[in-house]
Amino acid sequence: MPLAAAVEDLASRLEPLTPLSAVQRAWPEVAGAVVAAEAEPVSERAGVVTIACRSAVWAQELTLLAPDLVARLNEALGAPRVTELRCTAAPRRRAR
Image 1 (cartoon, rainbow, N blue to C red):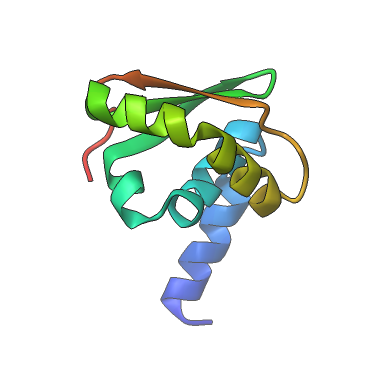
Image 2: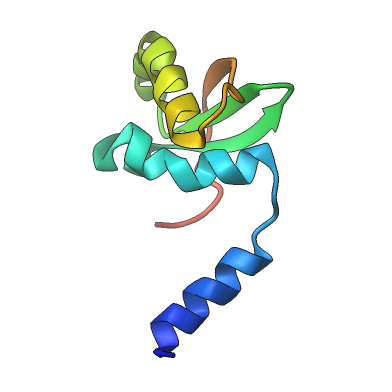
């Protein structure tokens, strides 16, 4: 087995099986590269996903796009697991 495939297999087995981890995996594809570079899902509670945005402008923009993003996330997840996005301006938790 090539090293890259072995690492991907190991990573998939070590990921937590939570709604937040599923949303985080789907986010780059659902949101697109530009949005994913500016905002990331950081928490989930009872279907409400909090998105940390690099600025208040991005938080406002994603709030306006939230209904479409929720529909696309649920489609990517294969079930209606996300009910709402709460977008906030917050510093990034991890470097990209």
